[in-house]
Length: 114
Image (cartoon, rainbow, N blue to C red; front, side, top):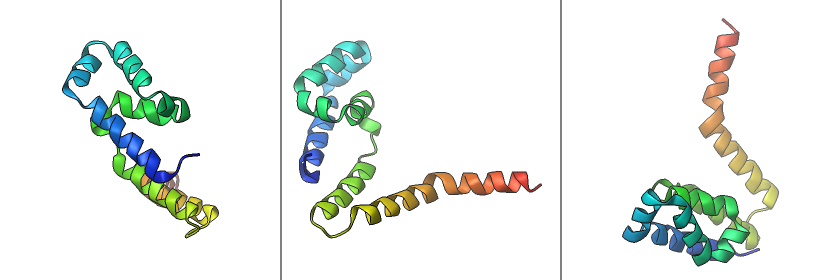
């Protein structure tokens, strides 16, 4: 498995490639050809991280790089034995629960108690 800084470098390069004017034009005119070009250009990244690859390729300008950077920073802390994998998992799980789920659960609880 690659280290966090290598992954971040590859993601940054892929986003830059996708946002080039000629590739932006190709994406809007022929998505299949554009994806094939990206797959040929970033073969290893595509093979190693297909879900991440397509998330970036399909919407490079709106890809939430800050979230990936947060996860990669935590991965780096795990690699450097600054934090245990379990603690990192609990931290991210709680953070994303609070951000995406908590309010919905509260709303549903209120609706059920009416």
